[in-house]
Every structure is written in C-alpha cells, then in structure tokens.
Image (cartoon, rainbow, N blue to C red):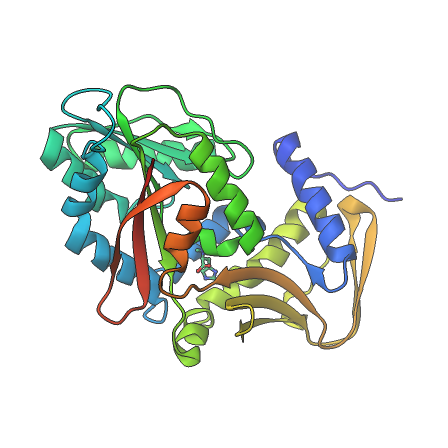
Length: 334
Ligand code: AVI
C-alpha cells in the first residue's frame, strides 16, 4: 500500500470522518453524513446559500424573530406560575446550539438586552474556531452581551454549567430537519434532560409547501447549493487522499413526499472507480448511482409542538409567517 500523508487534523475528527466515510461509501445505497459539509469552505458556502433568493428559510425565520422577538423573550423569562423563579426577577441567559453566523440570534439578544440590561449568550458548537469568531463578532457588535462559548457535541451529550439564570435554548434555522425523526426525538429528549424546570426551548422548523419552492431552495440557479454538495468530495480528496473527479458527479435535489423531506444526492454521471488512499478503499459507481448526502425534513403545522411535547416540553406558543412557510415554537420544561 502507498502511504499517503494526511493533513494534521484533530485525531478525533480524523477518526470520526474516516469511519463515517468508510461505512457510508460501503453501504447500499451509498450515503455520507451531512456534518461532513461543514469544513471551512462548506461553512462559507452555507452562509452564501442563506443569502440566495431561492433559500427562503433564513429570511422567513428572521422575519418571524424580528416581529416576535420581544414576546419570545418575555414569555421565556416569565416565571412558570406554579414554580418559584430561581432568581427574582427572572434573568434569562441564551444558549444556542450551533454557533452559525448568529445573524438571526442578534434579534433575540437585542430583545433580551432591552428587557434586562445585559445578557449572557452561550453558543454551543463542536468547532472552537467557529465559537471564537462568534464571540469576537457578537461582543463587538451588541453592547450588553457577554459570550461564554461552550465546545460540545450536543448531538451526543448535552451538559451545561449550573446557573441561577433561567435558560432559553435556541435550536433555530431548521437544523432539527437534518435528523431522521427517531434521531430528532432522541436529540430533543437529550436536550430536555440537560435543562431545569422553567427553562425554555425555541425550535425553528421548515414547513411543507409546494414542491417547486422546496426544490428551488435546494437547487438554486446560481449553483451555490450544488457547489456546497460537491465540496464534500473536495474535502474527501484533501483529507482522505481520494481521487473524486468533481466533473463526473452532479448535484441532485429530490422531494421525497412520503418521507416529507428534501434529499440531496451526488450522482455519478458515469460508471467509475474512485480510490480513497487514506482509507485504502476503492469504491465502484454505476452510471446514475448516487451518494445520499442530506435529508432536510419539512413538517406539517402542529408537528413541531408534538415533537416538543413528546420530549417533555410544554408547548407555550408558536409563530408562523403569513405564507405559512416556517414556524418557530417555544416550549418550556414543565
Ligand atoms: C443546516 N440545514 C438546516 C440546511 C437545510 O436547509 O437543511 C442545510 C442545507 N442544505 C442545503 N441547503 C442548506
């Protein structure tokens, strides 16, 4: 076997990546997990996607938070009638799963600062560099916010430092939609178990709508989503010494109505064999065969509240845009 020098990445991530790719490309049908999208280039491409006119999700959710941010903060801070507040008056701290660009979060942070003068913001992410960037940007841009970043893989374990504040945990941006229903249920239960009575949880979900609108959001005319999907192969070429020829793969977005999800695939245009040096693995593709790279579930009205209730949250209020495209639901730990 030829040895291939892998670039220096943390051994934990290297191991996780190697085993996910080996397992996914050896499966039938072939698949790769969506967390592989988010290397530096992929994170930048995702930010670009959120600015494409076809990707209605970000601006629709932002509109909901702009219209209802103050009420969301007020409800989250409100002491549950049957439970004493842990401090008086209840101070909120805002915890966000996935640091992202925090563009929409600033609406809630500003509402919290307006209500209580200052606020602690805890972005949670696996990437320390994403958290550093979030801290630097938010402390510079929003007066009154103190950022305590937490490096954590919240999909596996959710443990936060005890606080006398009431927490509002944000899981917005339709991120829950990238998990299969059983994984989503498990994740919500895991989050719930890390919270205390009276704490709030804000979930942003994308709703089912007409197929052309859904498909366009995941196959924009400028090709940014295609680049985002194909960048995954660039990452495997770089980090696992693979020889994927990007021109021989094509981005595909499919609406799977029975499963209520958009699927993203990478379709091989030709019959070919790809070699992954770092895994000492050869992978055969038939012409037209795909690698399934992402699911993005879309929900029906009422489904998000049912998911919250099943995980042990009492649904408090739901806000939806005028077109009925996106919902933000607040739940509270009973
Ligand atoms: C991060 N996640 C919620 C996005 C979504 O819409 O499922 C990822 C994405 N994939 C393609 N476009 C955006």
